[in-house]
Length: 135
Image (cartoon, rainbow, N blue to C red; front, side, top):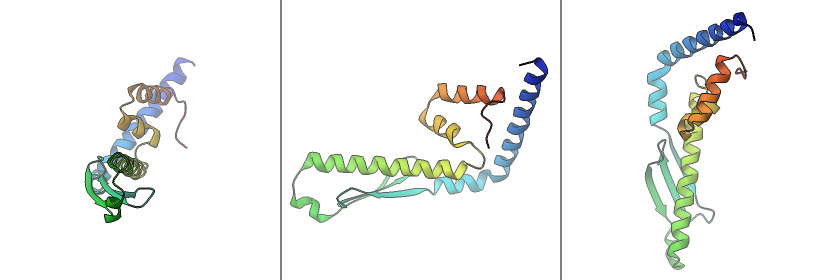
C-alpha cells in the first residue's frame, strides 16, 4: 500500500469515526435509556424455572413452579437455574448489540463486552487500514 493510499484510508476511517461519534451524540440519551430498560426472561427446558435479567445480567426475578419441589433434586434445580439465567443474560446482550448496531458494528461491541482486547485491536487495525469495511 502506498503512502497516499494509507493516508486516504486513515482519512476515510477518521471521517467514519467522526460521523459515528456525531450520530452517537444525537442518539445517546435515547439509546442509553433503551439499553438500561432491557429485560429478558427465559424458561428452563422443563418450564419449571423462569429467570428475568437486566442488560447487565443481574437477576431481576426468579420464579420456581411449585412442581419443582415434587422431585427433590437440589443439583438439578441449581443447574436449571444457572442455565436459565445464563441464557437470559445472553439474550439480553444480543438485544443490546441489536440496539446499538446502527452506531457500533456488532462484532466490535461483542468484543468490547467480552473484554476481548485482541479482537478489538484487530478490528481497529483492519478498519484503519481500510480492510473489512462495514457494508
